[in-house]
Amino acid sequence: MRSLYVCNPSMHRVVRVPSGPNNARFQNLGFGHLPKRNEYKIVNMFKGDKMKCEIFSFKSGENVQSGSWRTIKDCPSNNAWWMDGYPVCANGIMYWTLSSLCENKSILCLNLENEEFSSICYPVHGNRKYSFLECVGLMGDLRVVGLSAEEPKTIDIWASNDKEKEVWGIECRVDLFPLCPKFIIPTCDGESEEILVHISEKDLICYNVRSGTWRRVDYYKGMKTYNKPCLYYDSLVPL
Image (cartoon, rainbow, N blue to C red; front, top):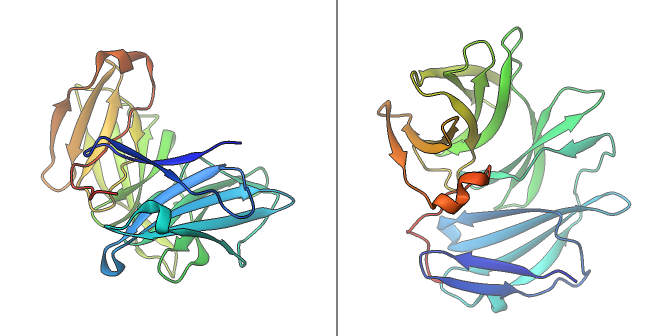
């Protein structure tokens, strides 16, 4: 039986999360924070005979062991689609990219406050071709970042100004010449103004969308053979 742990890198502490009542598999996990409620939530999406969802909640400053799991009854289920990677959390909403063999991509949303699901469309990019598309949390909201297949040093950032009408548009285009981006690394902080980019020279850069500047990021050389390093933030509170 697998166990689940919460790691606080700034405190160098690891805490085991209590097992749920259903002994569900940890298949697709997300971690979110609700500042107004001073609460953290772990979301586990997993498949049995259909898609199911469990949420573990605990208050900031309290012991993780004081939290509890519960099952969300109104979890959407469709065997025709699957989740592309792990979720992104921004502004209290968790997002998963859904793919299907017979339908266009879509985005599944979970409001962490009322724990209700909804869905929005994925950006329709028409004739634009991308070698890589990734959902990221950026400046307090969801963005979709694409690496252009036709202009390999260019990144497009898609934003939706009206999610109810499902209207997406390119918010900005970023030319990283002479750097050659390889893929985008989703950040854990939806309020961040930076995108973490892995470039072909096996280095990392942080591009600040607001200021239009970038900086090189040092990381442990032992990770050079690992394709997807990730970010952590020193502002995490003790768990």
